[in-house]
Length: 212
Image (cartoon, rainbow, N blue to C red):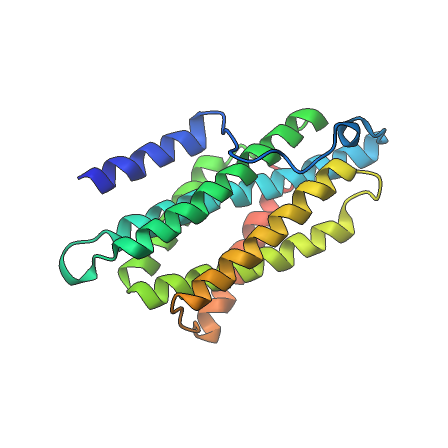
């Protein structure tokens, strides 16, 4: 019951409570005042909205997988749950940073955030129910795909949007570390069809969130 309450609390916080970061935002004061044209501001806002959606999904994935790790009987894995929750707290930093940057750019979050959260929660819960090695493999593949996605955003963001670029760069480093930690904890390699489905789902999400 405690695990379900924790998961429900995570859901409410991710969707309805302004997130608070435990680490300083990796931007300098002058970064947020760099002049951007209207077109650059619109592009940065759309890209950071996509990144914000990714962090909403990360909250759902880590919360659901931690819930599954605390399943009953032989499936219970408290160490894995704690590892997932620790990574989730760093993802909360990302959520707060991207939300703050959206505010600075005068852009809004995706209107479909509850839908993205629900979908990601279901995927994470399924992965977690299939066992620790599958759950960790899901983390590895998710973080690798996110890292590649963020690398693309580094190429697309306006060169003088130093604030957004600093946030994305730190997020990219954190995601790579989460993947390494999951790999070291015993992740299995997911089948290619599963990886392909994950990429397809991510492509749908990022395409829609860019506009809505």
